[in-house]
Length: 325
Image (cartoon, rainbow, N blue to C red; front, side):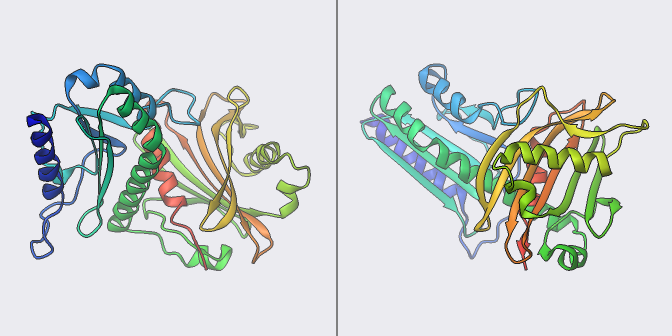
């Protein structure tokens, strides 16, 4: 019973520290690394089945990368030694084996983007059941928080003028001003940003309905579409080289919605035909009934010497800022 009271006090303190009153201005927004979860759990649970369950869900390999990288980076803190400034953490999971079964979610929406999930169970099996039951919800919430955080950082750093995107494609999109336009035409835009380890890129173009709907083999049609665009626009340094979808890794393909519009999401790897360059890509084909076409927006990365997870999320945050006008 004493441990339960101690845990209740700890969670109460956690939630109180997470948000200062409206009258008291916040000194610092939550920071830290992207895609990072702080897990407050005692060492016994962390080193046993519960810790394995948390790692299996929240540190699972990210879809679409040829080299394995975790969905989130997990940092474990023992509840008796968790003295880090909580206002600097965006994503927190508190796990406790106690006399109560419960799952709670507190989001600090008034002052800072911060998520606190509390998982309580009377046994190991109950904790594992709750983790399995709520993992997808937790992942969606935390991923959206990270995308929102990136979009905020982009706005603070400065954005490209949106007039070109509005006139050419009928959209607004928040692209960081650090991107340039190596290729631009009435039918195709290539946005590119140099980074220390290579570059990140965004492609925007449109295709007719039947390009993706004619044969009802949409994934194969998307691959053909990508390869055609690569052959036409995305060339390597050597003559005759161009970007294609890598055959060694089957892309991940999802039917989804994008701002209430039907869309297809494809994640996979690209390679340079006739060269050794390669990397991951994220492609959205969004049905645009107003203009009778699919708007295709793709992000791809060339960064051979660095992890790709956070770079892919940066591209996703730009793509998901799109609004149809």
